[in-house]
Length: 407
Image 1 (cartoon, rainbow, N blue to C red):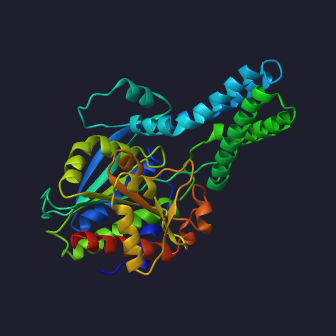
Image 2 (tube, rainbow, N blue to C red; image 1 turned 45 degrees about the vertical axis):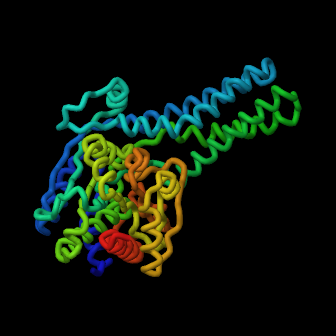
């Protein structure tokens, strides 16, 4: 089986146009993807879900809470050092709680529409915050493929939506990093000031607070728009999945040795809502597959640039005793490629809800010079490069070979 990067790029060019989740454009994209997969022989199920922009709201609230705590702490710096330190400790508490809270919001801010599952209080709160919209996931399988639960099950994921934001991704990441660092330094300085009353700490504290506030204020206004063609993010990942589907429909020697599902998610750009909705609906089936012959989940996101591939989620994967990180690395070596681990604050991918639920899931991404155009109108098809497509496709096909061989 050979992956043709240029054919994948042709698919990516077809889908490189604005398609924000919930916009009219997404319906046309859904129809095109469904038609394309159906023409290759796949049975495509469409699962609609409701989601809200609560994730964006909570991010802004977390930032606002830290800024207010810093400002309140500064006003008490000289008059009541211990009260100032206590307020500063609240900054540390918010930062420490944010990852857990954000995961909880991601899980709660989406709900499958065609399910009778009870909506809890937390989910009602999340769905009630921000704008409430609907989107759909597409699940593609080949008719006639065995549904034997004793066979290993591979789920290949890519999201089809795009978004634009006023602040480029590099600026947003820098603001998060500076704001968090400044907040933590200020909290440390406030505690030391309460303990020692050292005058030198005042200068450090005010500089750290200024950095936190200046970097944090732009994060209160993280708008989401529909001005990005999303060629890299994520027409590239979508097209890798579509070309893999085409190859695997033509060469079916893998059938009888494994089960294969293509999951094309919506609303990834708004708190990975599509992946969260799929997990809610299919958790019991996924758990059954994981406990039987094994469930392996591989997500493709932003791979279409001139750069080495990166592996997101490897640390949690290994902590969960998952095998996907090892398989990706082994497949890369077999293909003469390099895959580096990747983690960055504030970024989330469609593998995350599954990994956090204990499933064997990782994401393949690429970070190159063109990546910094992501989430802007400059994320156009002209920035796509065959290198990333070729690497992602080759690694995915090699992983399938490894799993069907029982390695």
